[in-house]
Length: 201
Image (cartoon, rainbow, N blue to C red; front, side, top):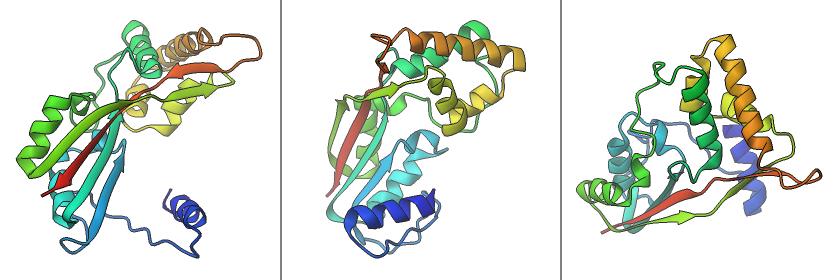
C-alpha cells in the first residue's frame, strides 16, 4: 500500500518522488508544528485509542493547521454496510471477537466528535455528510470488497463458520443485485461518509 501510495502521489503531483513513512498514528516521528494539514481517510475507526491520534495530530500541526478525517455514515444510509450487518445478523454470528476499536459509528455523531476534538484542543470543528456511491458490475464484488479489503468487517466475516459465510455471501450478493436498475446497468449502493474538519488554535 505504501509503494502504491508513493507512486500515485508522485504521479498526481508531478514529482519524481514522494516521501512515505510508516509510523504509529499515536506516536508519529515528526517534530511539533511541522505540518499545515493532517488527513485520515477512514482510519480513525481502526484505532484502539482515537484520542491519542488526535493529540498527535494537534502536536504536529502548525497553529492554524487543519485536521480532516472521514468515517462512514451510519446504516441504513450506507447501503453496503447495511447489507453486511443484516446478513451477519440473519445468517451468522455478530458477536465474534474483533480488534479493539471505538464503536463503529462513534465519529459519525457530530456532537460526540466535537466534544472529543474540543477536549484535545481543536477548534472550529465542523462535521458534514458527503454523498458517495459504490458502483459494481458483478453483484458478488460487494462481499469480496468487505472480505478482502477492510479491517474490522473482514475480521467479522473471518469469524463465521464456512456455512454461515456462504449464507452471508449469498444474502449480500442478492441485496446488491437488487440495486441494479437494468440489465446493462451497474448495481448502485449509496455509501455516504461523514467528513470532519478541525483547526489548531
